Image (cartoon, rainbow, N blue to C red):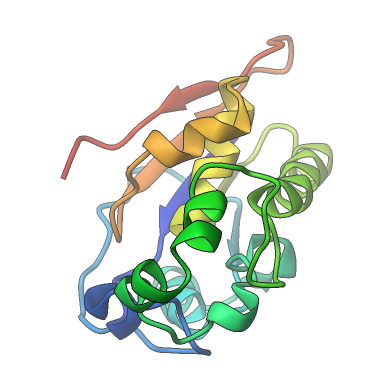
Length: 185
C-alpha cells in the first residue's frame, strides 16, 4: 500500500497570510513532481484548488470530504496578523493545543479523527494499491503524525510546502507506516 499525499498548490490566502475564505483556485501554475509508477486511484479534497490539481493528474478521480481543509470557523478569510493583534490568546491556544477551537470550527484533533478514519478506509478498500490524495498541508501533517505515532502536537513543528509529496507506505505484514518526507523547500 502506498499513499502519496500531495499538498495542493499555493492559493492567494496562503500568500497573503489569511485563513482561507472559500473555494479558491491556485494562485500559480506550479506542478508537483510525482514519483513514477502506476496509480491505482486519485482522491481529492472537495476544495477547488485540490480538485484542479487532481484533474491535472487523472481524468477520473474521487472527491472525499474527509481530506478537506480544517474548518476555520469565524476565522475564515481573516488575516493571521489581525488575529495576533486582536485575539492573541485565542490564536495562541489554537497554535499550541490540538483540541482548541476558539474560532468555533474544527480543532486539529477533530480533523485528525476524520483523516485517520479515511486512511484506514482507503487501506481496507485497496490494500495493495498506489493512491494519490490531493489535499491540504494540515491534513498531510496530521496523517504524518498518525503514521509516525507521534503526538498530535507534533504538527506544530512540521512544514509542508505547496506541491510537495509525502509518501506513506506499508506492506501487508507491517505494523507501522514508512514515511518519506519531501526534501526541505
